[in-house]
Amino acid sequence: MIDKRVGSVAEAVSVIKDGATVLIGGFGEAGSPIELIHALIDHGAKNLTAVNNNCGNGEVGLAALIASGQVSKMICSYPRSANSMVFPDAYRSGRVALELVPQGTLAERLRCGAAGIPAFYTPTAVGTPLAEGKELREFDGKHYLLERGLVADFALIKCERADPLGNLTYNKTARNFSPVMCMAAKTTIVQARRVVERGEIDPEHVVTPGIFVDRIVEVADPAVESELIAAGRRYP
Amino acid sequence: MSASSRGWNRDQMAARAAADIPDGAYVNLGIGIPELVAEHVPPGRELIYHTENGLLGMGPPAAADRRDYELINAGKKPVTAIAGAAYFHHADSFAMIRGGHLDVCVLGALQVAQNGDLANWSTGETGAIPAVGGAMDLVAGVKTVFVITKHVTKTGEAKLVERCSFPLTGQGVVARVFTDLAVIDVTEKGFVLIETAPGISAGEVREQTAAPLYSR
Image (cartoon, rainbow over all chains, first blue to last red; front, side, top):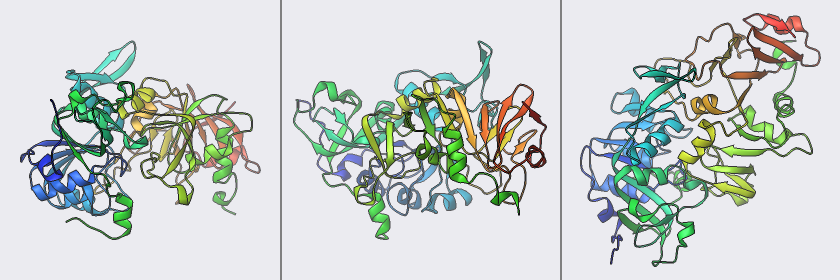
């Protein structure tokens, strides 16, 4: 019987190697897999390329991973935060490189990478500094840029419910990038608020089918990033 | 009296923009003054709000005691969902934007050029952290792009210009601009004055605009 559950967050992330590209779900704090990120800090893999819409808040979660020096490059759309100087300091000092990608192009790069599509044309960013070095092509009188599909070694994902086969559901806007990230990673590691029995998730309600998921760990009471920050917490 | 304390205030600018959004439109509102548009929709009209982080049918901000940090808007603030709302992932959300399914977006601006070019994500300053979010996707894909902005900067420089000096968000994308002084269309010949705020003359608007401003 297939059972993708592992015993702890430490075991879940233990397969991540130095130099890996890691997709990290979440939009701001919504959907951010804090416990898996903290386990990755403890695990210590270095020289990572991290992909997220943002660059973390306060000094916990993604911001803490950047502060730990394990990230050498960020791929994201909006690396600004009202309450964190971790990324700006790391970027200005040259410790972390930045590839800035429009948010929709980032989502589409993941979807295409996941679907075996190496590149696609989009009108987003035509005529802007983010078009530099990219092929420009005209279709039906309109200009489009060639953008590359994006695949990764790992994805760290937070979901609401998972079954042992890896079928997932999410909670409200905590879904955001997670489904396309599950699809675009070779190994997808998921923390679920609740792991349920096979068959408990109605097949009509499955958002991420289990084929896109490899390792599942239950984190029944995940930290709320805003609350950690309000309490002045930092990790480790 | 300076121009900044005259003309329309933030709410009045938002109300003026809301008046031009048709009943039944699917709408994405940017962060800042554009967010106020939702509070000023004329009675009898229903607009459906899209937030790019995966919600169609966004309702008002969440009350202090009902905040859910897994139900937020693009500005990362807790919001609510209306009856009949839908959640979806980012690729679907941006397919709505990039595929031309949204009717109107309302954005802020650093500069708008007379050919409709918009600059609203970066001043190009060295050392600044570049951050674009979904702005380039919105202007490339949404059917009608409205801009709400003060007519001039805090230091009095024109924001409506012949050519943007800041890095562009998109080329030839802006349809209409709502400022504290006037409503201005972007047309094939350039800026066209549609309406002035009460007590503001066309001459005054021209003085504060760094490009030709044509009459209707």
